[in-house]
Length: 127
Image 1 (cartoon, helix red, strand yellow):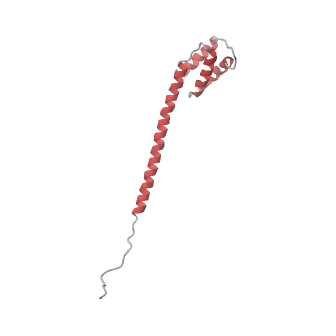
Image 2 (cartoon, rainbow, N blue to C red):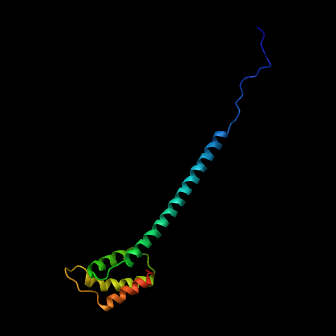
């Protein structure tokens, strides 16, 4: 059988498409992670705003006829609210006045000063 001289051997062709695929896949994963973080933070921000509104609603529905329970609830929800430095000062003054209505078995009704401070705090917090 005669030899064929016109058929050449196999030649390796450089193919970089796998690197392009891996690069595109990595970019897609990074974009998905960033989008997930942004969406998560957005949803958490709305949840925080809803919680602040819930706390304000709880303070607005506070029954001042039961001073011991009101003092505890006021302390609890007021600590959870976000406050400016001015509101923080009013809050600290109110907490000092409310100490007389907590940790005791029997407590008197709120006096005028305490009721005024409670109202000032609620007004400052826009409740």
